[in-house]
Amino acid sequence: MIVSIRDSLKLFGISIMTCCAVAVCHLFLNYYLDLTAVAELIGDPAAQIFYDAQLMTSKVICAVSGGCLAATTVVMLFFYIKHYIDSHSKEIGILKALGYSDFKIARGFFIFGASVLVGCLCGYLLSLLIMPGFYRTQNADGYLPDMAVSVHWMLFVLLVLLPSLIFGLIAVGYSISKLNQPCVNLLRGIVKTKGKSRDGKDKKNFVEDMRSSVLRSRKTLVFFIVFSSFCFSAMIQMSASMKDLASEMMGVMIFIIGVVLAFTTLYIAVTSVVRSNQKNIAMMRVFGYDSADCKRSVLDGYRPAAYIGFIIGSVYQYALLRVMVEIVFAGVEGVPEYKFDFPVCFITLGIFIVVYEGIMFAYGQSMKKIPLKQIMSE
Image 1 (cartoon, rainbow, N blue to C red):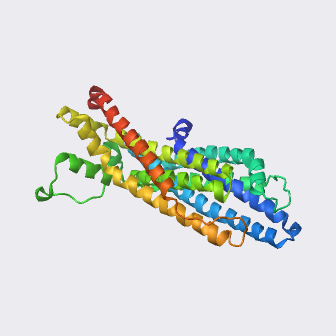
Image 2: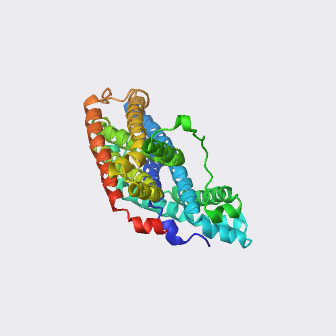
Image 3: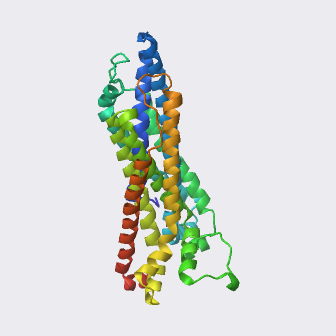
């Protein structure tokens, strides 16, 4: 087995992502199923409107959050597999040279589904813990009859067991596609890259050219930077509106999920960029470049992607809440009109600038501590 259980447990980012996805989806799907069980007990027209709005809310949140987080988990899984194959290319190349087929090597990557299983199981248990309070909060106005929390084992199969199996199979399939190359390339550590060559007439200075090269070679990490900024922007602004539109409990839940996702994806992206460019950073320091130049060539290229992600998150949360208020909860009494909250947006932007630039500065300073002797001896 080329991939050990210990290797799969290092994929904490996937576990966190699937934990958040399952926690949200299980919470609202379980609520949806319990709501449909008391449909016959609802006779008041106002209660019926509220009931229909709750059903629609559960569908929308599961589709939007579950779909978004599932797609991001797939991208993260692909990233981890590619990174693992690139960093273990020599060992894999030896196995291929000894006659092991691509499928025989790739099936070991099925263990990557263990990280999905851990995350899904944690999310499932977490949602069970907060479900009683969630039910009480959703029916705080007393429109609906009292409901007891029911355990639907079908959801356990669909949200815990099935995703683990599917992501394990996806890992095997993607691994086969990445292993489909000559074993000589793997033994030499050659990584396939795409990009246009630059001639002497189009040359920039070294730092700018290095920054462009880092961005071109790590496109997946650009996605992670955008996604982390998106989560920070959308979730924090959305949580500030939940006190008036839903409940404080919903606001706290959205805030925690947003912050966890943002910092997890940002940590994965930045640490991966720094680690993959350790040799480049070491060489720059040998030739006299200071830490500011190293930071500018390796990290600063991601700044536009981060702020683009913040803008997308702001637009997304406004559009989603506007749809919820004007379409889903249309006709429900007591729902306030929703407008874009510019003060909250600017406050969130200020916090984001301090946090993001602070993290980048800290990683820039950590580049000074990269041991030259160890890097050059590899």
